[in-house]
Amino acid sequence: MRLVDSSAWIEWLEGSTLGAEIGKELPDRDQWLVPTIVQFELKKWLVREGRSDKADEVIAFMETCVVADLDTSIALLAADIGQQHKLAAADSIVYATGQLYQADLLTCDRHFEGLPDVLYHPKRKV
Image (tube, rainbow, N blue to C red; front, side, top):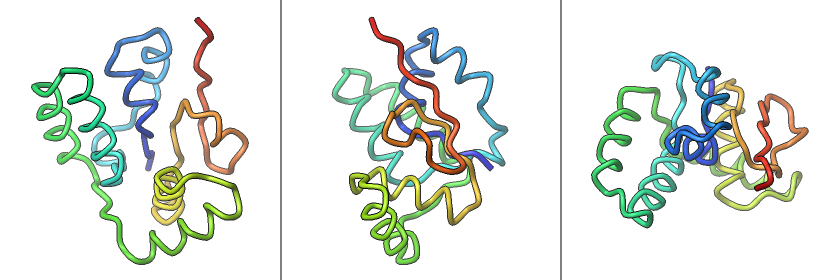
């Protein structure tokens, strides 16, 4: 199973060069793990970017994947992971969700670099 972080989603949706690389690593829908916090982050980003029409399409796609609701076990593990790795709340939730579902994390966010089960694709400097 693979969890695609918001940063990787954004690169893929923008069609960037990095997004094309990420596209090669996207899983089949039945192996694609989507935490509800990622749904929140992407909807917020798409609306802010003036792409509300795309937001509905993306959320509909996500609903065909494996959606992981934020529950007590994820929240408690996220609290521990956040302290251990100095991650922000949303990042802790994303990483904890992946760990509980035994999924690797596909991301472009540097703060995940070096953590177990992370496929890190660094953003290129412009």
